[in-house]
Length: 406
Image 1: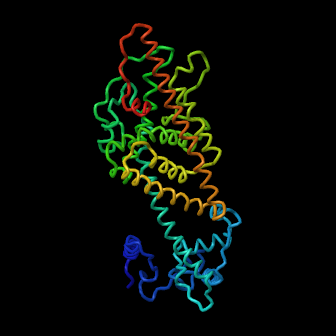
Image 2: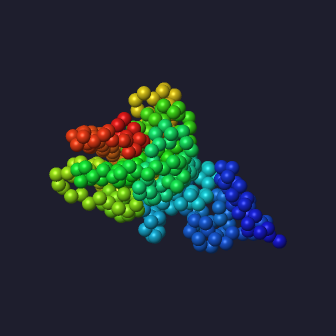
Image 3: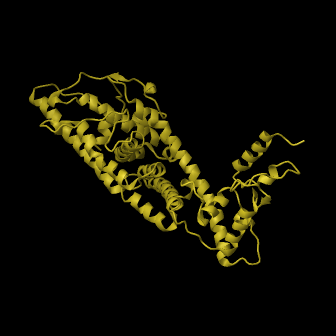
């Protein structure tokens, strides 16, 4: 009597957990033959190169390895998306992805070219597994801050914590858990713009970026001073990228949209330059335009944002913290490079990798312009209060000012 199917699945899962290539036939009951080819789903003739497969797939895989010919996809690695018969390049990759072991092919006709192809295919699968784990980790971080991005600070309340208070607290992923939310001061309408209301949208985006950075493993290795220096530099950058990609991917807009789905209708008048909302919106349109022009996908966006976060070039970091950030950035750079090669091939992959990195100066400049305009608006607003003889205005958002004025 054959053991239950759940037992087989448990054994397979245990083998994968140990980081080993699971040999499918070792987990089947004795005297049981496979019925379906794992590659093409046609009737299988037995186990070959560690997976159940048909004779056609067996012969193709063996011949491809022995000849050592490096096939190139003529549809830029789009075969799997087009629901058509895959080319030889994609078919060979599919065989390896489904479990066929290149190192299991043995022949007296093996050449140096054949041996190199075997190694490349085998370690290519290892690289792809590492990429999948990286994507899962980055997706988990992004999904964690999604509720915070969508909810926003409740209207009429403000988060008055300092940046260091946020950094020393555990990650908070919903606004209901923020300690000591305060009621906003009376709204200020000097210059026909509501300065109290607009700070909440910016604060929400910045806070989501800060909380996401606390979820990375490397962050605990940095000392508090380095954390503050790093986030004062990269928070505006990461916030810009998050808002731009959210507008494109989730809401399908070609202009910047706030996480709650609203956007500001810009009316050009004599008071327009005084609005922090307008400045914030306009400052990020170039980043959004870059993402649209380069058709950046979600995996590229997640890697690129992690690369921009891990910036060892920030001034006054300790040598140890620079080293930690450098190692972390190289890890994400390598992962994104591997993804570009898998998606676009070995010829176009490096070009795509360079195109993505070329957006970095544009995003950095937009973040700097955003900070400059914030200081300009705040200064002008305070001068207007002084002209009217008002008492000194209280700071509405400490963390926002700390980041923007750094």
